[in-house]
Structure formats: C-alpha cells, structure tokens
Image: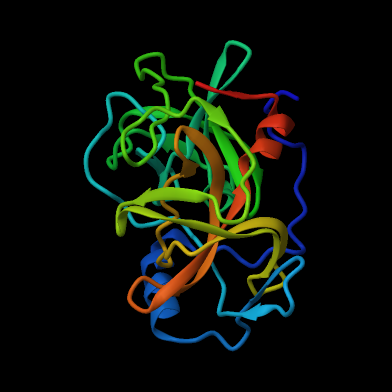
Length: 255
C-alpha cells in the first residue's frame, strides 16, 4: 500500500502525549521514580511472564547540527520541538520516506534537518502509535542516503529475527551496542492502557527519552525501537516492532 495520512485516528487507547516543553522533565521523572502502573512483558511460550517497569521511548530534546544529507541513524527535528532518530530511509515507487518510531510521529508534526528548523524536510505521512510512522522527503536539496548499521555498514535487506540472534543498535546516549534477541512475539504492557503485541525483546539496554536507531543484525534491518525496562546502569531490556510487516504494509523497500 502507498504511504498516506489516514483520514482519522482513534486515540482512546493511547496515553496523553506529554507537551514538548515537558519532554525533558518527563524523561527525568521516569528515570528517578518507579511508576505504580508499570508494565509487564510476556514472551509467548515462556514458562512465566517477566515483570518489569516498561516505558515507551518518547522523543528526545533537541540535538545540535544541521544535516545536509540524511541517512538512517541521523537525527531529525520536529515542529513540536523534539528530536528523533531516523530508523531507515524507504522508497515507495519514486517517492522517498523516513521511517521513525511511532512515538515520534504522534500528532503528525513537520520535520527539519536542523535544530533551528530552517531546513525543512517534509511532513509526517503516517503514524501508528507507538510502533512506527513515516515522514516524506519533499525538499529536493536534501539527498536521501542508504541506511548503515551502527558499525557503519550499509543495510541491504530486512528480515525477521530469531531467539538467540546477534543484534546491534546505536543511540546518542549509549553508543553502538551488541547483544542478542531474547524473545519474539512478545506482549508488553506499557501502562496507561497501551499494550503492544508481537514485539521483539532483546537484552540491549535503553534509557527513557532516547528512541535511538534501528535494531540490526549484520546488514539486515530487524526492528524499530518502541520501549524498554530497566536502565543501562543496572541492566535492561528493550522492545522493537518487527520491520518486515511494516515494510509490507507500506509497500516499501530500503533505499
């Protein structure tokens, strides 16, 4: 299917998105206090569900520096004041799109290549909270580049993960991390009525407020960051939307 903004979206099952001005404060509070409505994670087929304080990965505060070209792993800046990391660049027919975590595209913001919002990229074109969304490249002055993994090797395909598979992920706060897939088809309760099924679970740690980049395995794109539990000081778990069904839904291929 082509990527298009839906005519309407249902918000009844979604928690209220914190205003952009409070994003940094919310991130700090999540790190400091255990939420009483913390979520649980259950890997299908496991003997018992694992209990954790699961959190969604909301967009981060602004970063520095304009980008004359954009590839997966680069930051983009929303009209709402947030910074997100491009998971991958996609092609649908002759049109190019950037793939983002779903928490970034909630509200359908416009996107810019610089923190001053002077170099426009294009609008949000689809949003499925909290798993994934896309923006369109409408500025012909911004070259659309292929997506590298966090080690710098260009991704050439998308694939479904298996338990025990080696994976890696890069983010601005944790750098390039390597770990393994510890569960597939996992159901996670993030609290606030947000329950997401079919996720990938890994032992990569994440920090609230830093969605980070793609989950990859070698030159294969595997997942889109959604949320996590724990932290990078004491150890954590992270959850990802499998990318193959997303590409099939959008009728997209990797740039």
